[in-house]
Image (cartoon, rainbow, N blue to C red; front, side, top):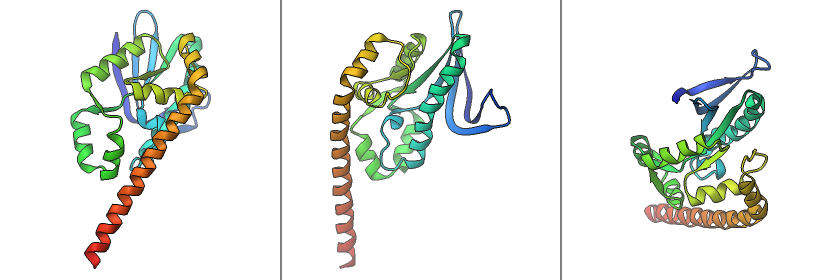
Length: 202
C-alpha cells in the first residue's frame, strides 16, 4: 500500500477539457492497494459548518465536496473510489501555531467541538479509506454534521443512507441550536469588546 501526498497547493485539471484549469486549495492523497485505488481529499469539519474567522478557508474547504462528488462519477468506472475526510482540530505543531494567530472568538466557538490526537485521527481516517467510505468523520459531532450536510453525496452503506434519510431533518434542528449558540456567543463577545472600547474612551 502506497500513500503519497500529491499536492498541498495545486490545480485540478479536468480530463474532459485539458485547456480548462480549476484551482483549489486542498490536499490530495493517492492510496493504492492490490484490491482497489482511492483518491482522498483532506477537508475538515470546517466544510460541514463554516465559523467566524475562517471565511476564505471555509470557502476552499466547501468546494472540496463538489469536487469529490463530481470526481467520483468520473473515476468510478475505473474502480477508483474517492474519499472525503473530515478531521476536527488536530493536535499538531501547525495547529498550535494557528491557535496563537486566529481570532479570540474563533477559538471560543471552535472549542465546542474539541480537538483530537494526531495518531487517533490518522487511524480513523486510514480505516475509513480502506473501507471505501465516501465521507470519513472522526468524532460524534463530526458524524452529526456529516448527516446534516450530506446533500447529494454518494453513500455506499445502506445503513448510513438510512440514517441520513431518517435523521436528516432532526440534524437540521440540532444544527440550528448550534447556530443559535454561536450567534449568541458572537453577540456577547462583541458587546463586551464594545463596552471595553467605550470605557477606554471615557
